[in-house]
Length: 401
Image 1 (cartoon, rainbow, N blue to C red):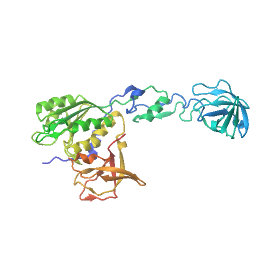
Image 2 (image 1 turned 90 degrees about the horizontal axis):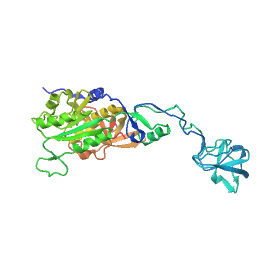
Image 3 (image 1 turned 45 degrees about the vertical axis):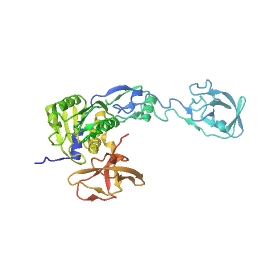
Image 4 (image 1 turned 30 degrees about the vertical axis):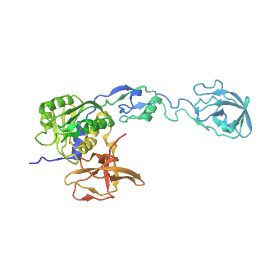
């Protein structure tokens, strides 16, 4: 009797239920790029910390400005070297961009609107109070929350954290992932391609996907179809936070992965997925270790990684997996799969009414080149016939950066 396939959304929920983040760790700010923030960050001081000029020019009292007015220049204020004297009536202070506004001044006149004449400056225009003045705390106030937990840190976030006075911070630990590819037929890209041999693409695709998801591949192995050798490779892989095995998940004579994993104490949570491509998907746990068995076909393994492994890695790092999902309008008919959700590789285009998705061509699970130019997976509900162009569907973005 054929085992019942697990619906995709049920499988995803089951995986995320077991993806419990470990304790966070503290890292230096310069090492935090790509990490997921695990604490609320508040600014230690106002940003900017003082009133400063947004232009090169002269700081003055706005009431002293106007065409033809001449003012005595009493000094200068440069970035990092504030003026030593206040600005009084009939006076001005040369100032550079970013320099502190001197006491007594309430505006800046741009240098192109002045003419310097020795110890005096002639002003050509009237300026209002506050002209070209950046106020203290205009960007961030001391004590203000600048970043919430769950944010993946990019260049802008690192800059904000530096401006908030944080040299170190608490972040989610990178999930440690072990990848095992299986099969007698697999050979490396530089090996002789003898009869029946297949290039081991997963040995390159899987670690790349792990890195894109914020994880760290700590072990990469290939196991031939020998039960004892497979057991050794899988035993090592189970020492990681996440084990990803490609191939050997079907029910053929040489497909040993299920038996070996269960012999190593892994609890099988599901076997068989109502997804095209990706039916021979396997998920289990041993303690806190998550174990994923992905199909051997290159597209099937990539699709199931994106839809099920990546969300787990994001959750383990403390990030919301849902951020990679949105909707799009189909720009081409998409074949439905009876009884299974169909993940269709699509290129995206942004138009006035939102995202549009166009299938990339042949959707066969062995056609890895169909991933070239693809930006997302369109999730086509199970059914008969086709889902017509113009329908709105859920899409899963292929990259989350």
